[in-house]
Length: 287
Ligand SMILES: N[C@@H](CCC(=O)N[C@@H](CS)C(=O)NCC(=O)O)C(=O)O
Image (cartoon, rainbow, N blue to C red):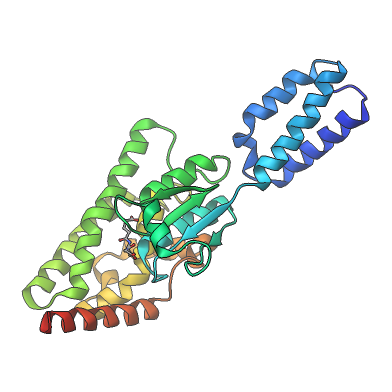
């Protein structure tokens, strides 16, 4: 018990109020909490002052948690959608970085000198790039709520392998569905269905890739769902007829606000695809 010193009692009240109202702080501030417990055994005035200071520090650090997302130009891009879902799952509040004012394009690219790509997550002034790495970062930085990666090392590795498969193989194939024609398009459709069948196998009877809850692989994969309409329209085929379990899983994910609010309207994705295709054809005709 903390002694009766009013300052310490008040600090304790603030601290407990803070813990109960801030969903993610429990794990994040575990060290500070244990420091407080250690200090609770002391009755000296100095120690009580330290408790108050710890509470104030706790407040200051959390209040200073500044999260900014520099998204791609197109809101339906699967990469940015992944980050939005992860942040929503964790309940992290963030701002969009306005290129014209706070962070211009040049400094954005300076923050990602390797790939020079968005999305970028800027957390307390530090930039993290690559959507899958950002999702892992978000999972680690806000550990307390909605864990995305499993805790078991083997299961974690498996999740990363599937996310990598989606990123490298599935993404490349889907691009071919709306950028090619004839034989190449037919080949891409076949390859895509094969990938989806593999992903159906991995899902098995689980509601989500993460098991009972949305996990890392779900976050990596579900942003492609709002592109399905464009793939089907460009390729004249039905994904549901070939892979009904994938569609059932995607609809289940869409029942979550973190997902439904992050995904773009499929019709807008299709318009974007048509626009991009037109520009591609123009550059092919007039290189
Ligand atoms: N592997 C990256 C891909 C991101 C990507 O391709 N971003 C594109 C937009 S969709 C980009 O930033 N292009 C350059 C630019 O917009 O300036 C990731 O997962 O984040």
